[in-house]
Amino acid sequence: MLEMTIHDKSCRGCRFCLDVCPTDCFVFNEETQKAMVAKVDNCIACLSCTSICPAAAITHRNHHVVANFYRNINFSRRMEKFL
Amino acid sequence: MADAEIIKKRRTLQETMNFLAALSAGIEPILGRGANSMTMSAGRNLGRKFSAHAKTTDDLLEALNEVKRVLIENNCLWGFEPFKPAGQAELVTINAQGSRQILLVFRDCMIRQALFRFGHPQMGSLCNMMYGFFAGSLETIMTKKATLEIKHAGENACLKLLTIES
Image (cartoon, rainbow over all chains, first blue to last red; front, top):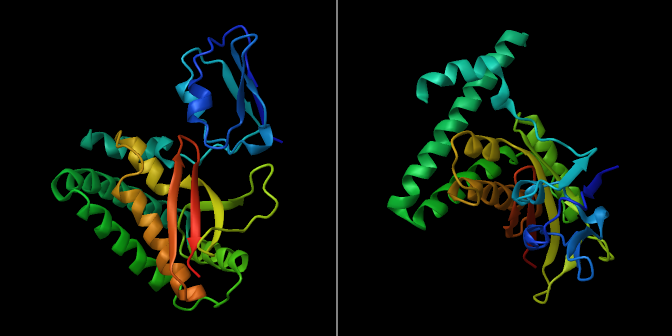
């Protein structure tokens, strides 16, 4: 099952994760001025929150990582000539 | 098919996708919105062609399974699954116009990978090809018009809203 955590000490309270999340997984705790995971069941593991978080405070576990066939070394060697 | 042959075919496909990504990035500034209709039309033709012998049905979930089967049958790396947000009672909802709607999460995507490879933005004309594919495919399977709106384009998955016009 997918797990999503926010490292409390790292969170700067910028709310970027709240803005970017398409399924409203986060809420903002006004008391602590930090983001919190509210609905992990809603997470589609798009990883936009992880990418946008300036403090790299958000981590996902047990999620589907897309098949990146461009990481194939032989393919990359062939593509070097175009870069 | 021998492994070497599969790898060779896959490489050809990857290079084609890279070429398409570069092409779509190139035509967008020139053609503007016209680029979207071109790629949408190409996707729709592909969807119609691939689904020509697919089983016809009016059940949306069954139709989606058929689309999935068609994609796998044609070696397309476009994995998707229905998504039901917490708090929503049913997977399929009805909008104000009486059309059936369902949220789909796209994970493995050839287009996304091709775009990232060369730093092209998402939600461009090439992403519209997927809309075209679904429109063409569901037009054949359900004999109804369909739209696929991109709600969110993420780094690891995209969320889209499929609407079947009543």
